Length: 605
Ligand SMILES: *Cc1c(COP(=O)(O)O)cnc(C)c1O
Image (cartoon, rainbow, N blue to C red; front, side):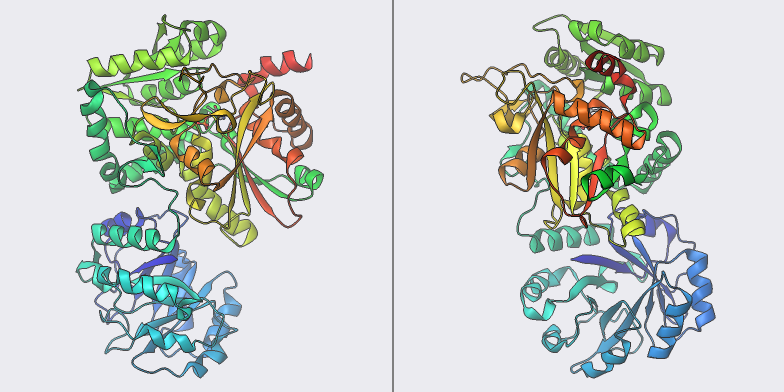
């Protein structure tokens, strides 16, 4: 069910409501309305369609306003005739038209017929003195007689009290073509000023009521049975401070604006959604590559570190710590610390420091201190322990930037939200290219799961979109040298959350193996454990050899050298057939520069 919020009048309020990501925002251009907009409309996330609302305005006025504000949709609220709609449609072919009809107790549905071919949606509102914003609803059961198949908006006095009724209505046949809910006056503190909390509550209640299963996190920090915060007592204040503040901070207009600005000007977003023509021909389906490889620092990880450094600043932190295995997350963290002039300490296993010299050098050039972890196997797990120890000792001034959708709640959810920009862009980019926002399949590789979480996020509860998670099988799933967590893992606790994890019968964590350093992790984030357990996502494991061949194939067919992590996702096309008309989006999580030595040795180049 889509949501439209209508009738904001102030720039700041528009931005706050936009941060809740309704599907449509409506602006009223009718002087007699108490919600007539006179202020500017700030730049909005592209996933939101902007709607201009008019009452018997002239065609030229509508066209001028549409081009001034770049509206994708107009809503015609007066006595506009079918001929008027038709003429407007012919002059503005990309513009969608919503034609409004007001209902009191009865409605003659025959009037819809002549509008069928000249508008895109109907909207049913309550008949009142002035068009719109009357605050009471008509009897929705009338819609049992709806004779059309055109999607319609349900409007007229809908409020938070109606959630139960809406739930009932959506179960009835009257709602078969109900496409969106349109809310306005019941969500206001004053005419034109919407109440952020009310709209937020409405959105979550409607969403959780209309999907049979919620694949997002619940209020206790769990995805199904996975997640939570299993942490030592000493860490509790640090994690709790973050938990209490992260959603509030992320919803602040200032925070949003700074995050989006940096993603745009520093990271280089939006990353292109590239139609891979030759690859598509090879596999006889429509393949789009989401080009996270083109981001500054070469992968998706920077989306998260930008978000977390801004979070740390808002929380008043003066020092950043991180752990890193292959060094990719360490580099992304050192980068944003340099950007903000904040002290950065990266913990890294002594063995990894020796193996990943170029990334160690990068971190040092960026001004970070790299501290070797000397205990245990001297790899990622030990670096994580050192970072946690540091955090316990520095609870007031230090923020710990975790690099994937792992760790205690709220980390998995916070990181997923920062990475969600990936699927938000996919939605509007696909709309431009294919005329629809939903792909048929989304493919992404999974180490901890952050690039997959970002690529899946907007589609989690839309079960028409098939999600494919790709794990590293190393030398083979059952070879003893693998990182295929879902296939091999059992329930356990790692890095503060309950998830699936590769372990021996007595609960010792098994050393994972993959040719790709980024997938070489014994666990998987709790979101993915739940996607696996509930079969919401398909899990496929890919061996080193299959990944390397798929990576080389992309080089030859498209002129793109992928990270070996991303090559695992690409190898799915050899295992899994798609239909010629299927739209398949693949998250190309990173570029292959960092993997050149591995490619050279493997192919003897
Ligand atoms: C780190 C990394 C991954 C794996 O991490 P996720 O959290 O699973 O996304 C995948 N691809 C690239 C390029 C990486 O650097």
